[in-house]
Length: 165
Image 1 (tube, rainbow, N blue to C red):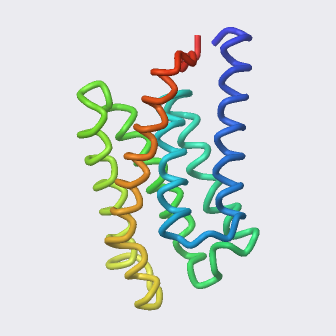
Image 2 (cartoon, rainbow, N blue to C red):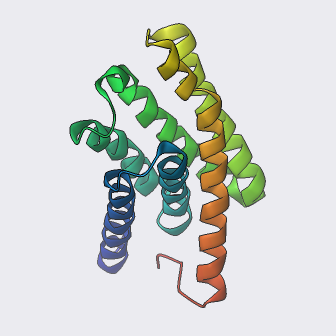
């Protein structure tokens, strides 16, 4: 990666992480925050690359826990949320060339399946938390995909350079 491209990568990753953190710290309810965080992950894959989205996806649940946004009973889920975010970005990034909408659907399902499997088979969490980690996660991932596509299309239509090079 050349120096200019490296600087763009770092800058865009930092800006997207900052946007995610602003929404996390904003105190908005999960049905608002969840789709926005997922939108940021999708946008990172589209605008910066898979590695950027994975980094953001790892940091968001850790920072949410450190700042008290993610309640203590959810702490066993942090590695699974980070992995789910990473898988969302990875699957989307690898399949988006076949169509962004199908890639969003597949990536959302993969994230949902990981989180649902975690609370069903791997860790014990209260039932209310287990429910939060299943179907609502699919909806927030899909919603985030819709938001990301709208933003991305808006950037492209407005002539903003979305390419990293």
